[in-house]
Length: 308
Image (cartoon, rainbow, N blue to C red; front, side, top):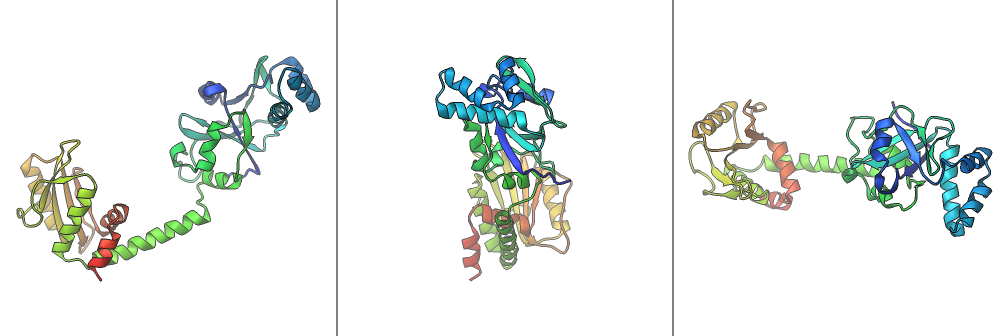
């Protein structure tokens, strides 16, 4: 079910996030700003926002700060449950609507309102965590907001993200990327055995592996050997232009018989049918998987020139 929200507001749950986990555990939203003080409660419920602003000014705050504090308090008290509130807890975006009703005082400095259901931090389409590291800076920058709450810029884009819907621009890039992979696969399948081995060697080198043997024809079972300088892992590689399940099975048998390698890589761009193995230490890379690495590691120009 798609979520709809015409208003989206960010809230900071306590100085330094001190209220984040308690609010998540109790499914409430706690706000300071003296919202638990009996006088503030009385004025807010009566809609006497000018008195709240005046009180802030009389307590030494500038007119602009008093206005901001008052507006933040007003949005909190007057929300009828239709504003989507978002915050960051433990590195991911959390969101919730508030239950209609007045806040409950915790102490003179703060009060809380229960949320509808619970604080959630996953998108509604695939259940993927809305990790801060995967969100636009437009939204992650909200965490540095110095006040208590503020309106979220470009709110409908964030709502779409929560619903798991990519923006038109992202969709266009994804479609272009898929078209690039498909075209790259066509080019890859034009390579013979020797260019395939050269390309594979470049890919592994770029990925941080170090070759410990020559390229091509090292043994019947393996084309070259690899060592990872950070982990000291040892691996073997077999590269084929066209391969069969029988050839993959023979590679797996040789890999296991050697008993010294932690990984095996079997690369090919063509086969009568999809190849697979139950051995999780052996990575079978077909044309699509190889092309994705060609793009990721920056060798598409080489692939184009090789086929020009």
